[in-house]
Length: 106
Image (cartoon, rainbow, N blue to C red; front, side, top):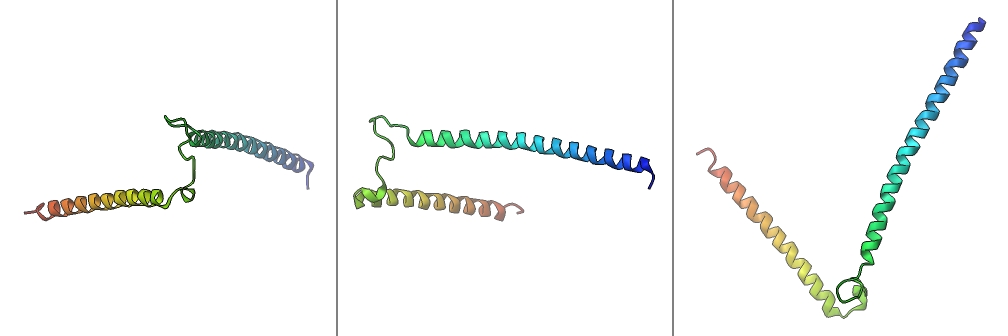
């Protein structure tokens, strides 16, 4: 094999190594940016969990299982009523849409 081919191969290898190193550096910088965004989002959420309300107590001072059963059942009832209301709104929208479609081409 002629000597100039070895020079071309070595130059090609060096170009590939430099391109690979540039690729790694660019992606590492992007990853650091994403990691810092995730870290700040987590920090914001942790700070929001420890915020205090007007009475000076934390919002989630005690766990639900440590409160009276009545409190947990009231919370469940409120949440379930919101679920039912959401389902009813969805059903009403569905009925309205089908009523509109029934009279569309008449």
